[in-house]
Image (cartoon, rainbow, N blue to C red; front, side, top):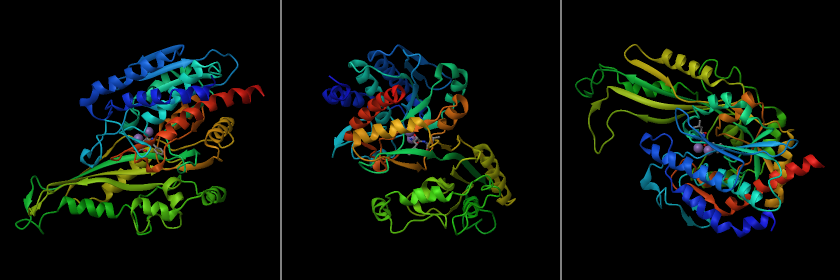
Length: 457
Ligand code: BES
Ligand code: MN
Ligand code: MN
């Protein structure tokens, strides 16, 4: 039996195992779910042990465990480091899920569950590909290391130090990651650019208590009004970010990049329809794809304060808060951008309030060199399985560890996503096409084979 036949013969088993994985609510940000994080890590250790890798280890960190395995029998063949994450985003708001987030359900050819696409379903394709290669005559033809972390959704605070302290163990010729999206349904693509991130929290404090808005209103500063005024000054009417120095290190898009993006088969009408919006919005002078992947952005992610209950309560709130994210492009430093944001926001605050600006996790943008030889094997693997030409595109999301793989290990990352943007990652009713779970396994297995063949030819 060859590898592809083995995969076909084990479809149901693989899907059931993925379901077991998805049933574990491994929400990394939720400290009450520590046991579930443990359970997910142990599930993966069990998986890697059962497929008979040469080495399987669970590494403890000050946070959640790192699961590691390797099978490196060859002296003169490439070494691929597979990276993925077993932690997931919280499922809330739970009432908007049609079926419970941690009870995987199949509907219309899709698996519905938190983590189905991001990233349990996608990362599991590689575990099953390794299993399939190791179980058949084809054998695993290259050296493979696999690193699965439980803190990606909280900014990988312990993975960077781990990379630095285990650089020798993790040494590789390339990193393989399935945690991105394809360009569209049945349209595989390799993501060669990801944005970075700086995430901020602002608190504006006014009077020492909530006040009667009639008794005090008009005479005492309202922190919610102040917060809104500050936010209104972060961008101008053309969508240009107003933080001094924000664009200093941003490289203009090259005409080649713009040309390549313009040639991608992007359907703006379908995009609008899928979001149920009449019109799109963004920085003047740029296309939708450019705005969503190649230009930096600033967005309010949450804002609160004051009365939010039923009816009208006449109150002047004593404080107001907002969470604001900035997506970054190459050469922008998240720490520097956070400092510029803080400076600007503080400069906008009147002396009637106290303002604090706090920085959450962030990360650098990344670019994979399009001439990198590993991309050829990845493109060929996609084409063999999907029977269509692969596209190369950039995406707006962030996987900060990609920049660290480059910096610490000197390795390029191949972003071989099997998801689609309509998977609704981080949202209610997250899903993953079952078909792409299987094609993902096959593509991963093909990739390892092609990489070995390339080298021998
Ligand atoms: N897998 C996503 C990133 C992603 C999604 C990249 C789709 C490209 C396309 C990842 O799990 C994620 O959610 N990253 C966070 C950043 C992280 C520091 C919390 C993000 O992009 O918000
Ligand atoms: Mn992810
Ligand atoms: Mn995510």
